[in-house]
Length: 180
Image (cartoon, rainbow, N blue to C red; front, side, top):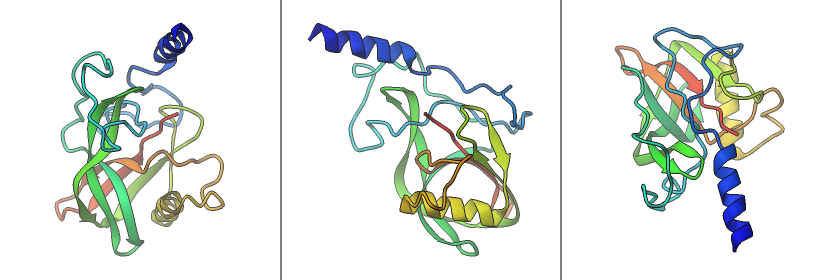
């Protein structure tokens, strides 16, 4: 039992508890930069109820910048028709604050001039701008868990994205959220 407690304590020390590094190479900074909590699939996102008595996330949940929404893609229709996603809410999980889909799915369309970025598998805060077609192929590959489609330097991180929308309600920017 004491070994289990020691392993759990060390795991908590090693887990990232703070925001991702906004100064890492390949990022886009400025006022549109999203909040950077880790995004492991949390106990709460899997239907459990985690709370302050279960995990210690060190305070209040993260707050996104104005105009940003976190979503978890559930189903992709096709590149021209968009996808279904749930608004992703922060939950206190074993690895700090994590995002998981909550509530009913909503249909989202990508704007013609969408600016997508995918997380690089090199760690937090590293992204690469991609085309709309590359984004939709990536989302589809991750949803199907088809790793012949999703190849280095990318990976699948729970289908969680930080988005902004234009005046028509279409996704204007979409950035994949990385987690270990």
